Each structure stands twice: as C-alpha cells, then as structure tokens.
Length: 201
Ligand code: 5GP
Image (cartoon, rainbow, N blue to C red):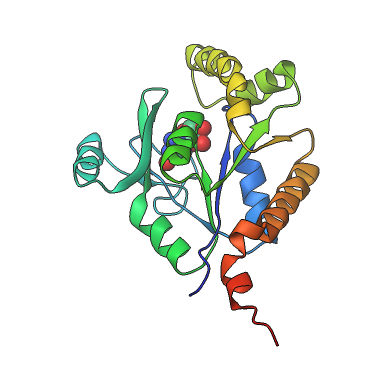
C-alpha cells in the first residue's frame, strides 16, 4: 500500500507573512497547494482558480450543504473554505498538500485530521505586524485595525500547533519549514508501510 501524502497546514495571524512564505516554499519543493473558495471580492491582480475560487455567498452555501468543505471559516466578514475532494484525493495518491488557512480553520482541520503537520507563522514583533498590515493598504483603516486586534488575540493559539516558525526573514522561515517537512517524513509512525515490509533474511 502506498503511504499517504503529508498534509501541511500553514497558519497564523493576518500579516504574519504566511502567503509570501507559502509562495516561496512552493517554488522550492514539490507540494500541491489547495486553492480555497471565498466569497471575498478579488483584489487587483488576483486570478480566479489560481489565488482563490471566487464564488458568491449562495454558491458557498450550496457547497456547504453538499458537505464539500474540509473546513471553512468566516474571516473579517467573508467566507473561506477548503474544498475537501482535492485535498483527500491528493493525500490518497501519496502527494503532499499545503493548506494556507486562518487559525479557526487550522484548528478544525486538526480535529478531523490530527495526522497533519500544523505550523504557526509568528511575526517578528507587533510593530512589524502592524507595518505589514498597513502596507497591504487594500482595506479601510477600520478593517486594518480589526485585523491588528484579531492578530494580537490570535497569537496565543500558537501553543495548539506542532511548530512555530518566526518570520523575521522569508528565506530562513522557508528553510525551517523545509526542515520540519523532512523531519516529519522520517517519523517512524509515518514509515509503517516500509517497516512492515522489512523481512528477516
Ligand atoms: P485574504 O483575504 O487576505 O486572502 O485571507 C484572509 C485570511 O483567510 C488569511 O488568514 C488566509 O490564510 C485565510 N484563508 C484563506 N483561505 C482559507 C480557507 O480556505 N479556510 C480558512 N479557514 N481560512 C482561509
């Protein structure tokens, strides 16, 4: 039997830099990123089917009723969900899957799929986090303050994760995640198939 792929969940507060880290990670190692569905409006430059599947609230509701999400969450007034089929099919085929999702979503994935690897991206400081959220500039002042406040409250969830990766520099954060993935793949409980096949000679 082929071993299952690894489910890697990269999460953390808004502005911690998860997006940039995941983009770099995908360039360096062979991972399949799950594309989420969202009811949020696309930002300039975002492409449907690449960044997200941009869908209406009704479509989202229908997917929800059909039980098509592995997890979903409401983030700052918009809905985001991970389509279940893609993720489970990939894992079944032995391929590794990357989810870049918010904290609520990561915690619900952990409930149903504890075999995943849960990585929390930590901002180097609150000042830096504030700068990053402000730099995004795509939201109103009120929305930015809301994000900052939420990010501050969310930091305490780091202890529910397997790993915390400090994002002071993207390259070193990416290196750390690569090391985590390598180590996770060597865990004996993930090697059961190989070990069962070792026969005495
Ligand atoms: P943004 O609107 O900035 O693209 O994303 C807002 C937040 O939603 C980010 O923290 C992002 O990681 C999270 N997010 C994106 N897709 C999903 C998803 O499928 N599920 C959950 N729970 N969060 C998501």
